[in-house]
Amino acid sequence: MRIRFWGVRGSVPWATPAAIGFGCNTPCVEVRDDRRGSYLILDGGSGLVGLSDTFAGEPRPTPLLLSHYHWDHTQGLPFFGPLFSPGWTPEVFAPALADVPADWIETLFQPPNFPVPFAGLPNRPTVTFIEASRHEIGGFSVSVQPLTHPGGAFAYRIHGRTGDLCYVTDHEFGNPAVDEPLLEFCKGCAALISDAHFTPDELVRHRGWGHGDWRQVAEFASQCHAGRLFLFHHKPGRTDIELTQIVGAARRVFPSTDAACEGLAFDI
Image (cartoon, rainbow, N blue to C red; front, top):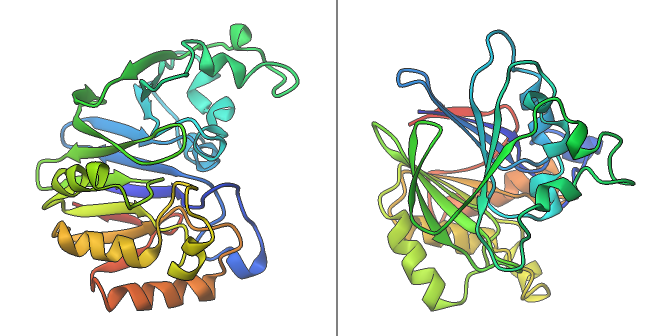
């Protein structure tokens, strides 16, 4: 299983000279197993636009799995290449959460938000709402675990031939009823991609925003015996120097820590 980061920021894309090294786009992660022909996209942030540019040749399935519905995880959807390329059949899998209408995806294309209406898309995507259970998506077996985040969000464990990936973005620690099952859910994963939006000092001023800090995430990775940790969902304005310092501090808690970086690929 090969994983590649296409978008690693949280909230909004952030392109400044001081913050460009780790990447500027919002969440999008590509997961593939070419030996088995399995393929999956995690989240549809602005990083999805760059990923879409790689789709060429014979049309193939391109399942997109959303963690939740906030703008930074869906803003790339109207620009998803398979919506416009002849022969492609885009699929969207999304959490079955309260207060999410069946036609939610159509609102992304309504005026004045976007010039092409949903009904006018060459390839309208199928939308499947998923519950917190186990599913077969894109040739992968995917387990689901609820998170603590305003409006709700899901974590995913993608089961691979030689190890599992846990994708845990947009989660606020502090509720044992959620945190303890999440710890069990992530135990022994080969790699953990986890929301580390804040520093410990910043988190004090942002309780209830639905995010964690790098120290909490590093401690969590140690507790669940993850093989590797990738800090993710970097705060807008977080400079490359600051992120490098955060990684250094996190490694003192959990040595196998890196910061998610656009273009970075790794194998499990």
